[in-house]
Each structure stands twice: as structure tokens, then as C-alpha cells.
Image (cartoon, rainbow, N blue to C red; front, side, top):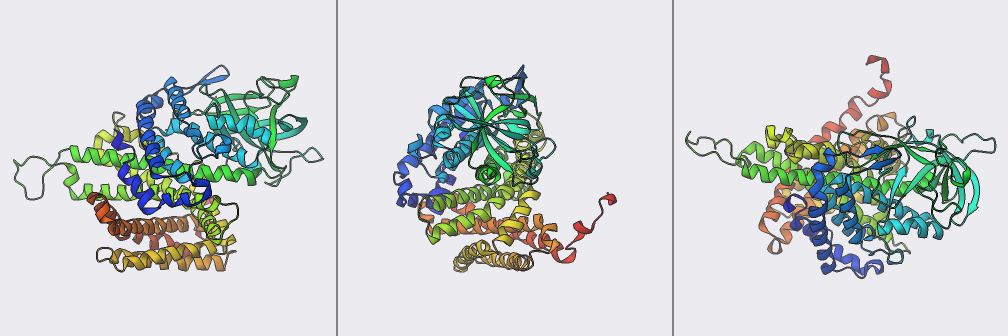
Length: 609
């Protein structure tokens, strides 16, 4: 089963040969990084993920969290898994040593975490949110809040959540109505009393950690007692489930209650809650209202929370890639073992051959391989950009370019990985045939788990509006131009390769088509057509980026063929030839409506439905 998680040869290629993560040791922040550390971490990750996460994958799906009075109970095996994860120090692997972390690059931490996401994404959701919560606090919290709430999360004793959505607002955060009223100050800083409801809170309650730190978006009323419309009045608060020292009400149960659990299609091991803040069931300090501590300045909540949201978007992409990857490895194993049918022209008494020898199954496996490995490469590339952008306090031009590329690629990484990773999981069911549609094989659950990823942390449509409206138009296409330079460099390398020159030509055609439309969008940002067709443009850009990365990997593999397994090199070349020949031609179809029916959706009346 270990081979069904993440093959070491694939990870080593991405990290060492393609990304060159060892060169990050040249930066002072990562001076201790070396190949021995990386190898030991990945060995540990594979072992722990297999032993403690994969072992209850189906049990976590069958035994969902349950609300027992005021508390949520989760499967005991999840407790055991998260305790093992904490004891290994993995909550803190990407944090600075001053905060008790291992100070490893985000790229390395992501490669480690991919094993756990692949093994059991529902259980892995708890550390994913906790790490992002703690990182935000270490960046924006006061020393008191860091000590009281971030450090216990880095140790894995407290878990964390992000509380954004509300039942009536959904993803429209401008419409949230959770209210935060000033309540003095104590040893943890400016104190507020919060009241309101938050929906879709993953890890909103559970019985596996000592405490839970909720990061909650709420609005501070104006002088007239009314909430400020829009996003300008949103602030951010750290709200512990149990209040902690040196606050005035340490040890008291905070006024946060679970109003109900959401019963999900997949991801069932993650408790997903509707939380009520300030309903008065608990009264710390003998007063109603959930006690929360201001993080940052009033009105800066959404800007600060974007740090956690962006990390979560990349982690969603990583989760989708990990599920796609496991779906692919299970499909390969099944297709190699399942004997059915005979080669064309074979005698009737010829023994059936493995289905992996049939052309159409090869087509499915190669498509699946390109989606799974493409998604994993895309997300690791983004984490590598984050390492390069953030490692130095005095930013160089190279650091600034890395940050601009990261900003541009984040919605692509989240969306492309979640959309096409889901297709890889869907293909796994097809390859398994009727068996894949049963609960006896993991691929059915992998599909259900992966179906959430195009939705949470911003739906595909929301990512598309962000990509077009902010990442292209507001940036005036500067980051996109930097991306094109890298694509052009890869195309030039491909021209010298006898086996990949045609792939390079196809990449060039896709690049020209996308660049032409992006140029027109940037030149006329007020055009309704840009947002009408934002999702199609995001899809086209995602395919262009993954096509470029797939070809770039194939060229790197060819250059290092004498140092790499022959089947890895052949697989990278096959994936590049497949993607450029079968996937990149989809791009003109996505772009065509921007010219033939540019404002169809804006002009359409809702009554036609």
C-alpha cells in the first residue's frame, strides 16, 4: 500500500532534479537543509502516513463525527494518528526555531504533508488548518497571543480553525453579520465579545486536542452601533474554545457552541460544524458573548486573513493532487493485475491480458498520470516560489518576481489541481469498472473526498474572478509577462530535442493564443466579457501552465537520463507528449466564446431557466 501514496522516485525528481530545493540552503533561513534531512523526513512521513493515517481511511468514512451534548466526538483512531503526528514534531516543521519549529522550507513541508493527504485527507485536515492558523498568529499576533495560542498549535496540543462563512452570506464576506463589541483589555490584549453564527467550520469542534483556537472574522460596530457595510469594517479575532492565561477568564469555557454538524458526501472524518458565538450558554466573566482577542488593527481582518486563505488554497490544491496521485497509483496496480480481453487478432484460446495492455486503458492511465503528476508539480512549484519570496527580509528583484508569480499562480494551483485532480479520481473508477463503483475499493471514496476540493476555499468561479480581476487586470499583466518568459525558455529548450520538439511547438501555439486574449483583457479591463468568461480563461491558463511544467520536467529528465530510472524518464516524456497533443488543443475551445459570445451571460435574463 505504501506505493499507492507518493512514490519516492517521483518526489525526489520533483524536489531535487526539477525544483532544486537543495539550493534553498544558500538562503540563511534554510542553511541547515541537506539531502539527509530531506530523506529522513520523507521516510518518516511515508511510514507515519501508512501506519497511522491510511490504516483508518475507510473507518473514518464510515464512523462520522457525532454531536454528544455540547461536544463533538471523532473516531479514536484519528486521535492516535494526530498524536503520532504531533510527537514527530510535524506540526512545526515549517516554523522558525524561535517558535519551536524545524525551520524547513514550505516546499519540503508540503512534500511531507502530501503523504498524509494521500493516505487520509479527512484526518490530515486537522493539522492543515492548525498550521495555517498558527502561521497567521506568528505573523500578525502579539507576543502574548503567539505564546498563548500559536505555540501550543505548533506543538500539536491545540488545534485551529478559520471561521469566515455565515449561513446567510456564504462566500460573500462583505455580508457577514457577526458582531464584535469592545470589552476592555487583559493580559492577552484588546478583548472583544463576539456574537453571531459561522457555517462550514472544518474542525469546529472535536475531542482530540486540549483546546481549539478559532480565527473569526467579525465586524466592530460604528459609533452609531451599526455594522459598517462591505469589507472595510471586518476585523479578525482569536477566539479560544477554553480561555487561556494570561487572560482574565483563564480556564473558563468560552461562549462558543456547536449548533449542528454538516453531513458530507466525502471528507467525512473531518468534523464540519455550524458554530454559534455568544448565545449565552456559557458566560465567561459572568457575561454573555464569546471572548475574542483582536489580531492586527481594527478593519484589517480580511487583509490579514488572506494570508491564511492563500495558504489554505495551496493546501487544497495539494490535497487534490495527493488524492489524484493515489487514485492513479491504485489504477496502475489494478490495470496491471486485472486480466481481461485479448490483443487484436489473437486466437480465442489465448489467455486474457492485463487491461493495462489495451490502448484505451493506456489512454486513461496516461491522462490520469498527467493530471495527478501535473497537479503535484504545480503546487510544489508554488510552495517553492513562497520559499524564495519570503526567506529574505531585504527583498531582491528575484524575490519580488517570485512573489508576483506566486500571487498569479495561487488561484491556478487551487483550481486546476482541484478540477483536474477530480477527473483523475473519476478515471480511477472507470479503470476499475464495476468494482470501482463499489465501496469495497478505495477509489469510490477517493472520488467523494476529492469532490469537495473544487468548492472549498473559494469555488472555481470565485478563483476565476480573482485571477482575472486582480491577478491580471490590477497587476496590468506584469506577472503574466514574467510567466511567459519562463514558458518561452522551455520552448526554446524543446526545439533542440528530437523527441520533444513537436511538444514545444504545440506549447508555443497554446502560449500565443492565451497571451493574445490576456493582452486584450488587460488593455480593456472594464469589458464585461473578461468576467463573463473568466472561468474559461482560468482553465486555459491552467492548462498552459501545466503543459509548460510537464514539458519542462520531461526535458530535465532527458538531460539527467543517466542518473534517473529509465521508466521515470520515459514516463515524463510520454506525459509531455500526451499533454501537448491531447490537452493543449482544448485551449482554443475555452477561449473562443470570448470573441463569439463575449457577453452572453451578462445579457441573459435569469427567467430563461
